[in-house]
Amino acid sequence: MTEPRLNADELERYARHIVLPEIGGTGQQKLKAARVLVIGAGGIGSPVALYLAAAGVGTIVCCDDDTVSLSNLQRQVLHGTEDVGRPKLDSAADAVRRVNPHAAFEAHPIRLTAENGADLVASCDLAIDGSDNFATRYAMADLCEDAEIPLVTAAVQRFSGSLTVLTPYREGPDGILLPRYRDLFPEAPAAGTVPSCAEAGILGTTTGVLGTLAASEAIKVICGTGEPLVGRFLMVDLLAMRFETIRYRRLRPKAE
Image 1 (cartoon, rainbow, N blue to C red):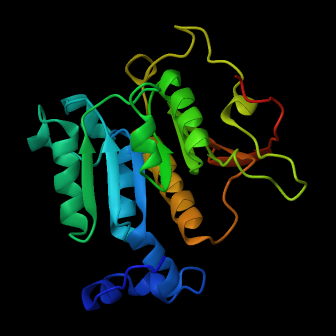
Image 2 (image 1 turned 90 degrees about the horizontal axis):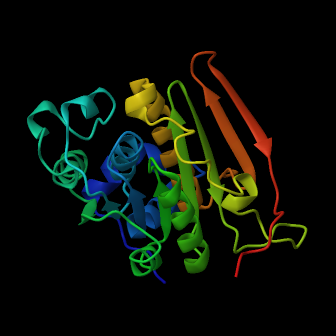
């Protein structure tokens, strides 16, 4: 398939990308052609959507069924004080449009589940999960595996976060299928054992760091450059300003 051409405005807008040999004009065209699914227009989804739009991703597809509240604004930088009470997708669309009129924003005011998400996931080239619950994380992992699209999945709690990239439908250099989400987390923790942000608190910049890293991984995957976090689990501790990476591999067969 021929990648879409960049017009004069886009060539100037993305000039600092295009001079990077690792991205160049070809990578920028791939970004323009991409449809990226972003789960959640909240703390993680905010920097994801803003940086994907700024980077020139052609279509940002976003799922969120919530409205903006005042307590969101400490970390959810897609939204402003004047947006309190609005659907998050409405203020997110406005923010993306301000950043880059070339980036289309496709809003889906739903909570994505295994039952309603298959067609939407299959319509995209890559997904980024910034959800705040394990049910959505497991559903996204399964849907993306079935659709054979890469999944960047990020999570945060208080002053820390984690990130990995999942492509379990592909084989590694050893011929073994690459790991799945359940190879990291075989089962969701028991209800009530992981406090929510409302209960435990969250440093606003924690979501900014993890969301920005997630957007970086997505750009690398789309452009086919660098070494994405496939089979590697990045852990970030902002209190100690420590970044650690562990490797993990395929252990479990897919459940029937």
